[in-house]
Image 1 (cartoon, helix red, strand yellow):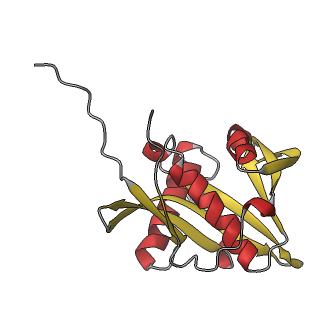
Image 2 (spheres, helix red, strand yellow; image 1 turned 180 degrees about the vertical axis):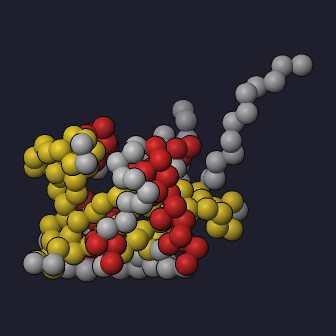
Length: 182
């Protein structure tokens, strides 16, 4: 008998939504600490900053059947205080085992920009780690500048709002399905 290596079971769908429940907010914070503190070493013990006081947390929740299971992705969005039409996205994090699926990260980006667009956003910006810039380019973002943040190269990028129609129900969100391998 030949045994194949263990492959973790991944959800077949993801709900992308604003974090409205306490467990969703805790899951988003834990995932950010895992990615930005433990994996990448960008921060000591926690990546939380003053932006979190006003930011909206968005989560990707794995679904098994119709039951929510776990937060497997997150991003935060916030208005720029000096100009409420300028919004920023930051701290995009996806659990390691879900990074190659495409549905989680791209779903979070779509809801981030579309929900800000519905709230009066005329410019949506983000400082994107350079290794992720290609994903954002494919999703109709353009590089405005290349900068260094937290000791790592980043692209300051802007979303093309024409590709992100306003989405008015982000508390409910939408389902995102992984692409099937050909």
